[in-house]
Every structure is written in structure tokens, then in C-alpha cells.
Image 1 (cartoon, one colour):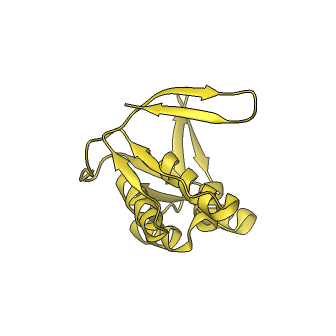
Image 2 (cartoon, rainbow, N blue to C red; image 1 turned 60 degrees about the vertical axis):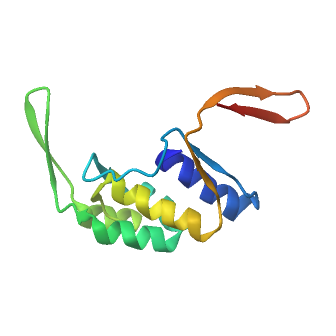
Length: 139
């Protein structure tokens, strides 16, 4: 589950033709509120765009473009480049966005493709067999 599980489900559906099912440990859909913030770097934005253009556009619309960075490493202040540099170099900038906003955009994309999400289930065991078969047990 989570952002990784939703992204993996989209990738399996889009690129491998596999209809996955996403299992979430949470008992139900939660309102995550503000929660944790994320910095999505160019590679993350490109990956999101590749998985689902609508999720990418919704995430960027909710986020804030990073114009520049200043950070303290071992008592020394350093200045890093902003989105202009990354856009020129990699085709995408850097965006600050809420974890819940990314999750909601991915969840909407998963649902639009008819991928089921099952709540209240945890992975208990994974059994990899010699013939490339995998068995997963949920509780």
C-alpha cells in the first residue's frame, strides 16, 4: 500500500499488463490532512508523469515550485540550485508537495483503472517457489 504500492500497481497495469490488487494495512481510507511534506525531484516527477499524466498534473498543481535551496551541513551554509537549473538539465524542476496530495492523486489514478484497493489486510508471508511462482499470505 501507500505511495509505493499505488505506484507499483499503476506500473504493473500499464507496462506489464498485470491487473494487480493493492492491500492497505489501514482499516479504511483516512483523511491524512496536511501530514508530511515531500520534495519531488526531477526523476520522481518524470516517473509520476510516466505512470499517470493526470496524477502528475494534480500533484504539480498542489505543490510549490522550489526556487532555490539553502541548507546547513556540518555547520556550513550551502546554497543549492533551484528549479530553473533542474528544468534546464533534466526537464523538470523540484516541487514541494504534501504526502497526502501525492497519495490522493495516485489513489484516484488506481481507481480510474479499475485496480482494487483492499483495506485492513497486512502481508504476513511471501513464499517464492522454484518455478518463478510467488505466493503471498495476508491477514
